[in-house]
Length: 198
Image (cartoon, rainbow, N blue to C red; front, side, top):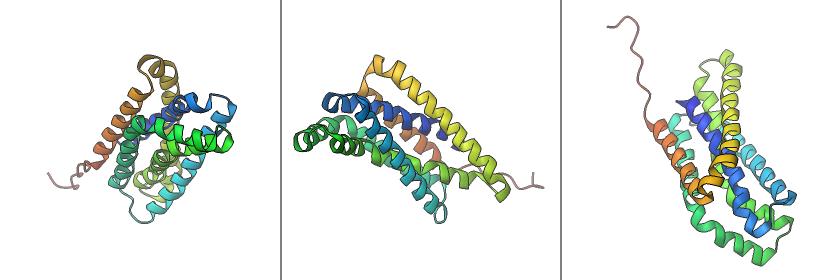
C-alpha cells in the first residue's frame, strides 16, 4: 500500500506542477520566467518536505502521520479552483508580472501542498526499512516508484488530461486521488499471525 501511494503521490505532485502553469498563464504568461518560478517552488517545497519528514521520523513515524499530511494537501488542492483566480489577479494588480510576482504566485499555488507531499518519502522509508541494512534498498525503491509516478503524472496531465477535461476538473481529481491514498493509509495493516499458532 505504501509503494502504491508513493506512485500516486508522485504522479499528483508532478501533475500539479504542470497544472500550475495553466493557472499562472492567463496572468503571467507561459515564458521561461514562469517555468523557472514553478520549478524553483517545487524544488523548495520538496526540500522543506524532506527536512520536515526526516524530523517527523524521529518522533511519530506511522502510516497515519503520512495520511494526515496527504489529506491536508488534498483539502488545499480542492480549494485551488475557487481561489486561484482571485489570488493571481491580486498579485498581478499589486506587484505586477515580474519575477517576484511569478515567484509569489507559484508559492501561493504550490508550496503548501507539495511540501506536505514531500514529507511522504522519508517517512515511508522509515516505515518500510525494518533494519539498518534495508535502508538503502528501501530508499531506492520508494524514490524509484515515486519518480516513475512523477513521469506518468507529467505525461498524463500534459498530453491527456489538460486537453480533455481542463485544469479545474483535473485539480479536483488530484484532490480525490490524494484523499483515497490518505484513507488507505488510515486503515490499520492486518496483524501477522504469530508463528506456531494455528
